[in-house]
Length: 499
Ligand SMILES: [Zn+2]
Image (cartoon, helix red, strand yellow):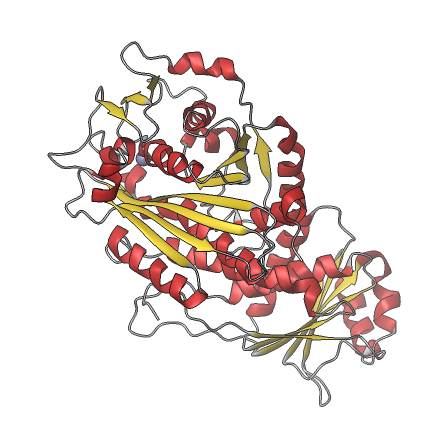
């Protein structure tokens, strides 16, 4: 296994039917019960340890509304953690509450955990959120320490009548999200464009995906000048576009999806160098590519019945004597010429050629992920990501997938008249404007020039990729945002209903 890939261990997950009255009391160290708030006392009365539970509930309720209560183990079962919640319409609210509950549970350092609900109409949705939070919260991030922290949770038992199939996508999206977060958290001296590619090639081998790499030489032949302009200052010539291909087992494929990711392994800003604060986290500027790979992993684990190609633009954006400069005119692979304005707008440059390359295969849908603009963060904060599409009729589905997955996206306009802001006197298009106004929209209009009109395309500007304190069920600053959204979107997309 490649050292840059996450360890293949995660808690063992089992699903158990609810049979008896005291079903929630398993042989686990800790049982987490999510209980309907308004019927809390009535429900507690039905449990084996009801006298103790009611006594504790009454004691706590004298201080105010009870959010949670804890009971230590007795001779028949482990500890119990009761969390009082309401039926919820919002997946995001459920995920957020689940993360809070998991934090409390994790402080008890359980080795085995049971998850159950009591009196909740949306029981499976709560279990999905709780399982997602438990998996995300117990998955360790990369550590390079003499004594690294060890995972404590070894097994999770989910008490549900629905069975394992109901939670297949919860598990798969966790695996995808964890892969994305793990890769993104790697230090830039270890995960450079060379090592990153090797790690992804190893992963592809493990998963049975085929790979193709377009290195500097091949990209030169393809006249991918926009990508090569960014890679020019690299001290090595390992940059390139990596393609990972998944094909379903059945020969009756229902369509094809291309996932595109921005993989800038470190973004110095280039010759328009960033400040030290602006550069601090720039090893995470490859998160779009990690999310694309994470999505590929999740969809292939779910045996998606369509072909998926994942196109990853892997390079650093370095400074050096060869660095590309403002006012250069660059020709992209589809022949469009670009007037360079700012070397730190490298994401749209590498994506331009990657989109053009992916489009040659005429996929039925393209989705790209990129930590692309500060303007998108200005507009949305880090709670949501921005969505753009060349198809108005996808807008509803894009936002519904956001609400249902809990990874919320907000659609921005893609009207053609924005293009005049990028008019250039010397080239076909300007890379960006000098004043940054509406840069998230202009970046999307820029990318639109590299996607043929006939191909439906969705661009996700990952404003929510990094958020202090985490987001939803994810406790780490690097959120891996996008995998849950994409899996949810594809589950309901017309050409590609998952089995
Ligand atoms: Zn940049």
